[in-house]
Image (cartoon, rainbow, N blue to C red; front, side):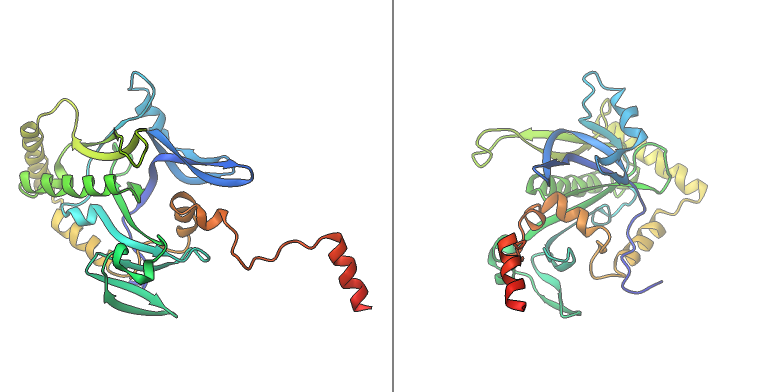
Length: 293
């Protein structure tokens, strides 16, 4: 295994609740009230839709995708959903520091340091809102690929807090059969004083529509028994994923970070650095030429 390379769950598509649009020559994130499933291919107009997006929309009455039937690849909640406080270098897009509120890994002049993590509100290094909670959820949608996943990325507190709680509750109540439960992603709305009473949307995880919790657990037990009889080794899969994720200090590589900055840190790419040289006017050019002579 190549050391230092981020070996993450195989991704065949993306799940988002927003999109990036171009306004006045700048590409800015725009919130939405529905899910969108895309491929990993981006055109000048945006991400190309995945075939499953249209297939799932056809099953809705409104055409808006607000639930997605999913299963989880792993039994360990922390493998399905990895959430950390993360600080990106806004000029290069490289992750600089990632921590869990206790310990962090920080890159300093190409040297990796292990330091205490007091969380962004109490960290001088994160001053100015540079550090945010950042989560990545991997789920399987349909039978498109037996081990291929769709990834949902978020920096929203509501989505992160809700997903972390649901995963742990479902793992506990099912007796560790999290990877066998029939689940669905749900888009929920709420309003707060900070949102000026306008709805904000976040992602929740629940038992698939039409099933009670008890029925879902019974179905998960049957699935687990069938997998065991076929030789499917869930414990080995979790161990392999854990080892692969630990191969690198940071999960996101340099190919992905520009996309992450564009979606979650738009100020990093819409505001030019303070020392950015402005184009010379014609008068300035003539003055420079005169001085050179």
